[in-house]
Image (cartoon, helix red, strand yellow):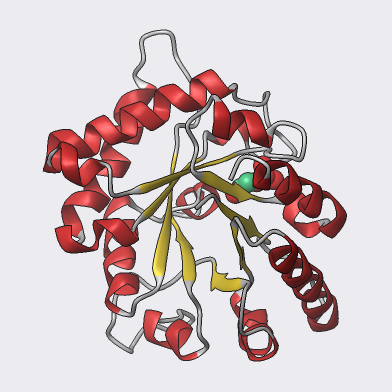
Amino acid sequence: MILLIGNWKMAPEKASDALSLAKKTLAIARTYKKIGVAICVPTMHLPFITKQIKKTLAVGAQGVAAMSEIAQTGLVSAGMLKSYSAQYCIVGHSESRARGETDEQVALSAGLLLQKKIIPVVCVGEKERDAHGWYLSTVKEQVEKVVTTIPKAQLKQLVIAYEPVWAIGKNAVREATPVECREMVIFIRKVIADALGEKESQKVTILYGGSVNEQNAAAFVSEGGAQGFLVGRVSLDARRFAMLAKNIALLA
Ligand code: PGA
């Protein structure tokens, strides 16, 4: 099933706006049942959104502590997210990595989420591309650390989102092409296959993220080999998110 995950980042500011957007997104999920729709919302908004929205639309968070000991001021545990019915949690987003999240922490967080039956959406991606292909080693290290840390039996619950940092957000250098996406999907599976075997590499779901919109999404599935998307800005605009869902539901 094609997966469409909205990454709301640090928006909306008001609880009422968050609930209204969640309800509009729920309507999108109900209309396009052939695809799986989810939203990863600010932790602050999670409890009341999951209270009001129980079915069809999956709700998740955007970060979790990489350790389970309770003496961690300011952090939120996987168990807390579970107690508010989170089904997904983004880890290793380039914006969190820029704030210091390491490959080790990403892998530990993914393991703790899986223990609580929350699906980790692990973001990987290079900051920039270079002619020698050094950027591939960045992605290799990010992927290897996660897949070799979590139990093998849980690989089929793992979601990896390939998000080239240069293609994300308002400051994107340019959009990635479906061909670039396809190469990375193949590369990521090869990294997993080299570490754990070909059969295991097929179990992981690989999404694409980075300036995905209603116009470019379909090609990332049909030509780019993406099994779905992690979408930032467009997920905050229900009309555009609905168009995006409609366009990829045609391929499902
Ligand atoms: P964008 O963000 O779709 O606004 O580029 C994607 C992301 O950061 O997950």
